[in-house]
Length: 321
Image (tube, rainbow, N blue to C red; front, side, top):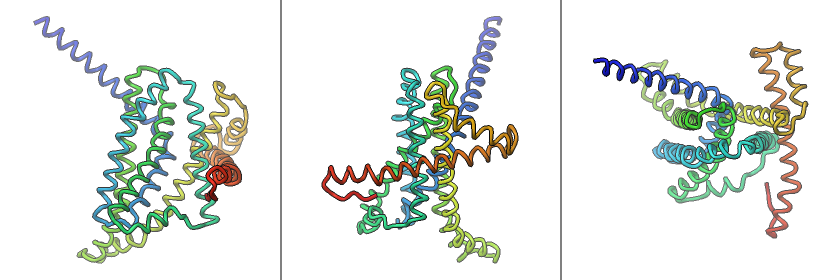
């Protein structure tokens, strides 16, 4: 009897340890995942364009295909690479984050530039001109997977940098949890977005009440505006996160250790809005976004004036941005 009691006591102790570990994993994942919000929003904002012009019956299967590949890339390719970096080359994490910050800043600035100076995207035009539906779908899926892989690498790197040192197993579990949760969130939202106009059209035509028909009409009319708002929010989030990564990376004593602009931003935020709270965050995010935009525009100018001409010279063609 005493042996049974001892066994049950051991089982209870192991259960408590497992529960504590699970709680630690969830807590680590939640805190780390919030830092990747800018990339998450941009991912959700970018993906719907890949099903534009596709047969509505194929929209959800395409999104499911992209989501499956996204999970595979995160768990099978990016997670092991991230854990190897964390274990054997942690010094590379901040430089990789800085590269990611530069990428986010460039992407955000490029979107704003295209809004201010719109021009025909020959690549997109070529894709749309494809007559074969199966070929169009294949091309769209490949493009979406490539974009998702880049954004997933950003998400995993940002998340990994926020996970505190400790058990490799807990860190890997937290990273895996973030990867799965973010993929479900992004592609669940994308699925709702791309089908919302179909839902609205069905309600507008088939609902039994005028209220439901009005809601359906509102959904059909409102979704284009919602997508525009989502794109704007995604761009702002990219610039904010990109600028924040660069500001913190430059300030990090283990990397460069510059006092500015981190000190200026913190002092200004405290002066305007106090030491904490939403006001402090908003002021900090604004300045981070301005810095992200400024650096992104510099990268855009450098790319257009230097990189593209060099590519054109090397390939013997006129490279166009």
